[in-house]
Amino acid sequence: MLSQERLSVAQECQRAWVEVDLAALAANARQIKRLLQAPTELMAVVKADAYGHGASLVTPTLLDNGVDWLGVATVPEGIELRKQGIQAPILVLGAVNTPSLVRAMAQWELQPTLSSPKQALIFSRHLDDAPHPLPVHLMVDTGMARLGCPWEQGLEFMQFVRGLPNLQIASLYSHFAGADALDPALTQVQHHQFQTVIHQAQANGIPIPRLHLANSAATLRDQALHYDLVRVGLALYGLYPAPHLAHQIKLRPVLQVRARITLIKSLATGAGVSYGHQFIAPHPMRIAVVAIGYADGVPRRLSNQMTVIVRGQRVQQVGAITMDQLMIDISHLPDVQEGEIVTLLGEDGDQEISVDSWADTLGTISWEILCGFKHRLPRIPVD
Ligand SMILES: *Cc1c(COP(=O)(O)O)cnc(C)c1O
Image (cartoon, protein in one colour):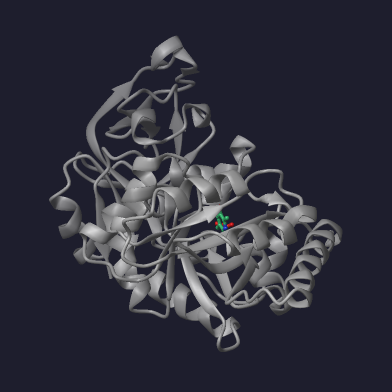
C-alpha cells in the first residue's frame, strides 16, 4: 500500500505527477562512487532535465553525495544550473559553434567539448575579452561517428589547440557506442584507439590533465575504463544499461509516475472503450478514468498493452490511451473509489512496474522512456 506520507504529497497534485526519490538517488551516487578508485572523479550527466527527473531538483542531492562534475547537453541547461547557484564544474557535451554561445559559456563558466580545429578557432577568437583561458575538453571519435575529431587526427588536433590563445586543455575524451553489449569487441577496439591517442600525447610532451571515456555501461563493466573521470547518467537514476551489468551494485529506481482516478463507471457487455473502440467489454465491467495520457509522456503505443497498480494490485489498461486520460479495468476491485492513486511506474505494495518493462514492450530503451515525461507533470521530491 502507498504510505500516508505519499498520499499527502499526492493530495496537492490533482491529477498526475512524477515522484523523484532523492534517497534512492543519493544511494545510487554513493554506490557508483564506491566502484571508483581514487582519484577518479564522478560526473553526473544531468542533460535533458536530468533524464526527466528535474535537473534543478536532483543536482544538489547529487553534489552532496560524491558527484564532482556535471554534464549537460546544451548551454541553456548549464546556465539554468548556474542561476541556481551551482558551482561545480560543468561540461557541455553537445556542440557549440556560435560566437554568442561561446561568450555565454565563458561568462557562465561552462566548459565546451571541442571536436575540430575549426571549432577550436571559433572559441579562441571570441574569447579575447575573457579574464582567463577557458578550460576546453577535446573529444576524439573512436567509433561512435558522432562528436569528436577522428582519432587518427587526435595528435594534430591536440597540438593545434595547444597553440591557440585563450584556451586551456582540460581533458581528452571519447564516447563508447556499445559499452552495454555482451560482446566486448567494439568496446575493446574503441579503448585501444583512445589509448593510441594518449600515447601520442605522451610521446609528444602534450600535457593532458584529465582523461575520460566511460558512460554508465563502461563504468559498471570494467575499472580499466574509468581513467580520471566517469560520465554517468542512467545508472544514477537507478537503471541498468543492460541486464548483464546488474550484478555489480544495487541501484534503486529514482522515478515513479502516479495519477489519480477521476471517475468510475460501469459498462455493459459489448460497450466500446475510448477512440476507435479498440477495447470492447467482454462482460459487465467497472472501469476507472485516470488523469494521465500521452501528452504527459505515457506512450500511446502502450494502449491495451500495459498494466498499472491500484491498491497494490495489478490492473489492466483498456482502450486507446488519450491525450490527457486513460481507462483501466477495476472490475475485480469493487472498493476502489474516485480520487485514489494509480501507479504507472514504480512501486505500490509488493508490486512494481519498471521503466525497462515499458521499454521492452515498446522496443525502445529506458533512456527514451525517462526523457519522455513532459513538464506538465510536476516533479515531487520524496525522501
Ligand atoms: C549522455 C552521455 C553520457 C551518459 O550516458 P549514460 O549511458 O546515460 O550513462 C556520457 N557521455 C556522453 C558523451 C553522453 O552524451
